[in-house]
Image 1 (cartoon, rainbow, N blue to C red):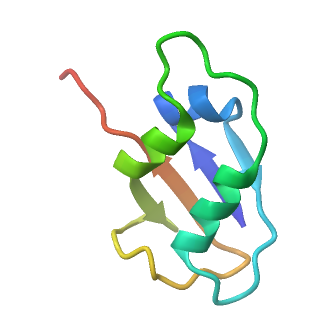
Image 2 (image 1 turned 120 degrees about the vertical axis):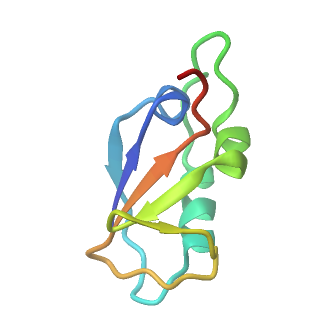
Length: 88
């Protein structure tokens, strides 16, 4: 499964995207646990930790908004992590 990070999530994760090998039927919640289990370098100054960003982010599953962390995932899915955006 491919995870793509945007804005502050990208800065905190230290990568634009990364792959995870989850079993068919794993959930968004288990994906988020896997993301947080990865050891990462310290985020840039002023960037909140990834755990804080994930707790406030919206997620797209194959380009469709998903709010239910119990949503089942497939190995071929793409999950986008969209932190809150400011400005306008």
